[in-house]
Amino acid sequence: MRKPALFSFLIACAIAPQVLRAQPAPASQPVIRYHYGDNSAWASPSFNDGAWPVAANGSWPVPAFYSDGFVWIRALAPVSAAASGDLAVRITGLAEYSGPEQVFVNGRDAGSKGEFPPLGTPVYSAPSAVFILPHGTAAPGSMALVAVRFWYVPAWRIVAIPSHLRIRISNADTAELAQHAAFLSNALSLVPDLALNTLLALVGVGLFVFWFRIRRAELLWCAALLIFYPLLQWFWDATHPDYFFIPCREYALLWVLFILPSMVTTVEFIWTVHRLHARAWRRAAHLAWIVYNTAFIVALSSFQPSSFVRWSATAIFVSVQAFNAITLGANLWVLFVRRYNRAIAAAMCVIPLASGISIFGWQADWRIGTVSIGLFDVGFLLSGFAIAVMLIRRALAAWRQSDQLRVEFAAAREVQQRLVPISLPAVHRFRLGAAYLPAAEVGGDFYQVLPQSDDSALIVIGDVSGKGLKAAMTGILVLGALRNMAQENLSPSQILLRLNSQLASSSDGGFVTCLCAEISADGTLTLANAGHLAPYRNGEELPLDSALPLGVAPDTDYTDSTLRLQPGDRLTFLSDGVVEAQSPTGELFGFDRTREVSRQSAEEIARVAQSFGQQDDITVLTLQFAPAEVIHA
Image (tube, rainbow, N blue to C red; front, side):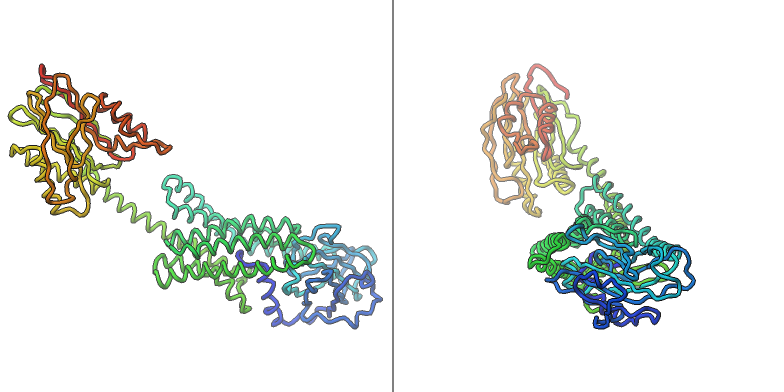
């Protein structure tokens, strides 16, 4: 019987007798008696086992925890009258977690599976086995005494391990054929489950590849869930058929290797995809899987009973129930309270619910024809499809949104390119240069050079708080207002005052730094500053009064500062994207480096800052006074 992959083996062993007790033993099966301890005389046909208890419905209790762990069973089994040639005994119905066993028929050793301690390592056994009888052991049509010697790993002695034992003695070829048929039937019943899990795993691999481009945590954990759950199912299915005998310690390590990633992924998936903020419960869920996997290895690796093993086995039961309760509670919260990702939450509830209802002895697995299906399979497959639907819906929504944003950004870039010109106008007696590198598709920095009728020019450079489309639109509004004011022959301080009044009355909490300068043909420079970086003159920062940025306070006053440029003087205006460039190690470009490169061309200053590590929009505007010529950019 297959069990859901997140079930503890102890839970499965504990509840199965509830189901088996309701099933009557077949009338054709012999009476089975059992006894604890170990005595080679119990293999003899002449031994009187009349005082031994009878195994009800073919099941017997496990030995006491602090015991040698041995149990013997004895039964008279008919030998098929039609048998000829080599005979074999086929034993089925054993618990999947049964340990090593040795079979005697009419007092003769017929074989064993697994190894008995202390000489060998116990195995995680298959639930059925075929043993070829030595010649002359039994005759067709007779009754044969079958004695089986079992040994239980200490962890398995804590709970009842159900075995609805069936014994058949027939022709060896018939027994082997029946074993092969059972193996093929089990394998075929797993094909639909394996196929669906393989499909979901391939989807998970595709999502993981896509995550390398998107780098979203939600996508990563969706991919991990669709990869690790099928891996766990494949392992479970591979160890289920009747031909595998894995040593207990190796099985414990393999089980942990496959179940640990799925448990970690379950927690991170639930908290990330559902956007939960309950950190304490998240830590508790992680603690539960740590305890479960640690205790599982300890319990199955110890072959001597001790209080440490007993506590480890108990910890398996408690921790897996705690894990299931936390994950179930989180999904129920999302399903009924948050009402978010409800399809995924409902599907994810099925997995821990399978463990919960098993406590009451309800069946958690079904067989439809040759197909075997369990609640864990249903929950995971529903979760996988719900994840796929969610991702498809979000991808379509993101595509529509990105398509709309592309149109908006294209329009904004077109407007911005007109208001933040690539080429500069001719300014009498000045050589100009500019560089503009937005950090996003559309930036918040801006600049403008507006020639006046008296051969002077108005130069404005600014930086809108924030990035992206919103910042760019604010910059566009500022430049639009500036163009209108440039026709009124206002001083730089008056322009800033008017801009501040407009922004302060309509601001939504942002602000704009702005430096406004008027240059005359004779070299006179008048500047007013609203919180922007001061310009550099021949590699030295100009001492300049500065007031609050635009849009912060409506009653802010701005003052003009005037100086006279000499022939050959060079001015460099820039935004804080140069100063705040940051290297991969966290080092800022800083004012010292900015001062050193301020004598370079605008393109070179922007390139150096960008290569250092651009964090914000970079804007550089250079101006050189050349009274003997008229310069075109």
